[in-house]
Image (cartoon, rainbow, N blue to C red; front, side, top):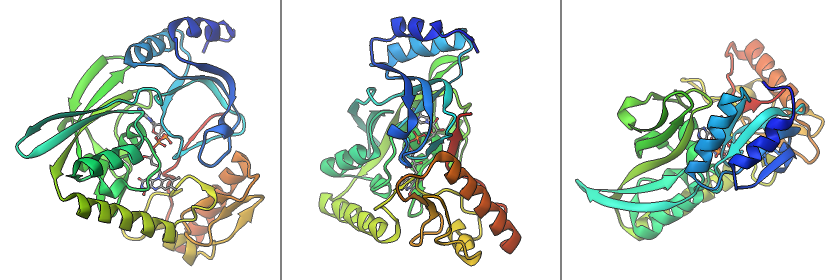
Length: 306
Ligand SMILES: Cc1cc2nc3c(=O)[nH]c(=O)nc-3n(C[C@H](O)[C@H](O)[C@H](O)COP(=O)(O)OP(=O)(O)OC[C@H]3O[C@@H](n4cnc5c(N)ncnc54)[C@H](O)[C@@H]3O)c2cc1C
């Protein structure tokens, strides 16, 4: 990484969109934690994104794409390098029908909430399972987000990628490796957007399913506190939340970081938790669950920073 700070000024010449220097991550992460980011970049369009990535790559500045920050913990030491937000790259367009499938092309900055709302309005079925997941299209694809027996890979037809080595390319779902809460891509590869395929359905039925899922989530999840969704991946045989409950860890607290009483796989920020407290609690839970049940839990949430 370049040691001098001039790269930040040079980066500004590549991007007309906003760049925030020394931006506190706690303003963005859904957990409300994290130290300063050297540069948080908001390219206005894919061309600027391309320029920014080429510049960062050429200057050996570490960078990562970010979406809605709902599966992300930035450490208290902050992030050295640039985080690239795709928030301003957020167009949606309907494509032609083919074989009874209606395709929507959505750029990565589109929120899942917007995509669910658009499919509902157009009477398209297939996206209902994402109701209430607070991520963006890009983050959801990178995480292969899922709920209620479906995953984003089930509705994804193709992706537009910016690969720091191979450049811009469009790839079909079949050529990608989606697994549970992961798409196998290098961390620096930016998902610019995706084409999704849906079936025509009854608008009322789709809306009903969306309402039902949102109310189930309100019932089960501690949405009254800041959180990052499920902290751990579920082992194949048993939900992580049940293991955490079995280990007697519901409600356990370090500072303002607490394992939710409502759902064992959620850690909530009761107000002033730091990233350090949350990470200490994650370690504690992992250790105690292993001692009690023999399961080695793996984090689903991404942890970045120093
Ligand atoms: C209340 C709550 C409920 C949740 N429920 C669920 C659920 O039911 N199911 C589920 O799967 N998840 C759930 N989540 C977790 C989270 O919302 C999803 O993983 C979501 O898809 C993450 O999207 P994001 O845009 O917030 O990604 P971010 O948190 O911004 O990033 C997540 C990862 O994706 C990468 N990334 C982001 N954008 C891009 C891009 N354009 N190109 C390449 N990589 C990118 C980041 O580098 C990071 O590694 C929940 C979270 C919360 C807070």
